[in-house]
Length: 400
Image (cartoon, rainbow, N blue to C red; front, side, top):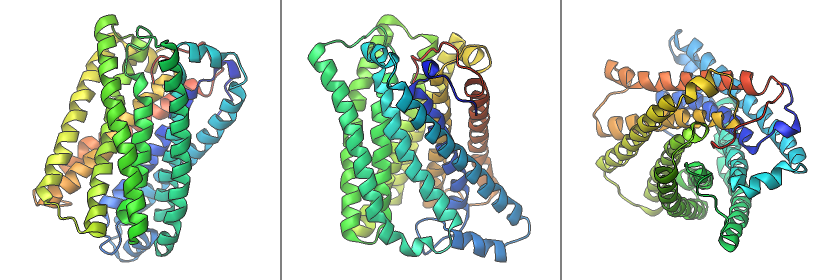
C-alpha cells in the first residue's frame, strides 16, 4: 500500500480499516452459527480443532478457507488502522483541519473511535477462533475489555461533545452542505460501542461484569437512538429542501449498520438479562425483533441503491475516475446486512423451529448473504487499488 500524500488524506479513510474489520467478523460468523458449541456462547479454537479431528474430510478445506479469510481481513484491518493513525497524526498539522471544521465535516472524526471499537471485535473473533483454551480465561479478560471500552467511549463522547457544543454556541451548522445523512456518523460510533459493551454483558457469568456491560450498552444505545432520531429528521429535512449530491449519496446506507448494531445489542441485552437476571423472553419475540430490523435494512438498502444508481455514484466513484474516501462507506452496509441476516436466520427462524440448519431451505436463505459478503469484499479490494495505491487526487469528501 503506497502512502497517500498528507494533502490528500481525510479521516474517512478510517472506513477502509473499518470495512476490513467487519469482513473479518463475517468469516467468523460461519463458524459461530454452523459449528456446534453447546457449552460456550461462542465458537472457540477448541471446537474447530475437534471438528477437524472428527468431521468429514470435506469439512477441512472449509475450515481452512474460513480461517484464511478471517486472518487475511484481520491483517488488512490492522495495517489500515496503523496507516490511518500515522496519517491522521500528520494531517492534523495541516490547514485542511480548519477547513473541515468550518464546513461541519469534522463529524467524520467519529470514524476513529468507531474503528478502534471494531478492532476489539476483530481481536475477539481472531483470538476465539485461533487460540486454544482462550475461553477458559475469558472471565479474566472481560474486565480489561470493559476498561478499554470505557476509555474509547469517553474519547467518543469528548469528540462529539466538542463538535456539538461548537455548533450550539455558534449556530454555524451548514444545512445545505450537509443535506445528507453523513451527520449520523456519531450515531454509528455510539451504536458500535454499545454492541461491544453488550458482549461481556451477554457472555460473562460474573453478575457484576454482566451488569456493568449491560449498563454501558444501554447507555450508548440510548444515546445512539436519541441522536439518531434527531439527525435523521434534520438530514431528511435538508435533503428534501436542497437535494442530495452524488458524492454524499452513500450516506443513505449508513442506517443499515446502525440498525444491525442496535439489533445485535438488543439481542445481547436479552441474553444477558436471561442468565444474569433470570429474565424470560419468548422466542417469537426474537422473530419479531429481527424481522423488523431486517425489513428496515432492506427498505433503506433498496432506497439507497436506487438513488445512487440514478445519480451515477457506482459509475463514477466505484468504476469511474472520481475519487472519494467516502466510497468506503459502501462496505459496512453490506457487512451489516450479512451479519444481521445471520441473526434473523438463527434467532428468528431456526430458534423458532421454522427452518432446520443445513437443509436446502437453510442454504437458500444463506445464498443472498454470501453474495452480499463477497460483493463487499470485492468492493473493498477495488477501492484499495483505486484510492490507496496511487498518489491522491483532489478528493470529494461529502459522503461518510
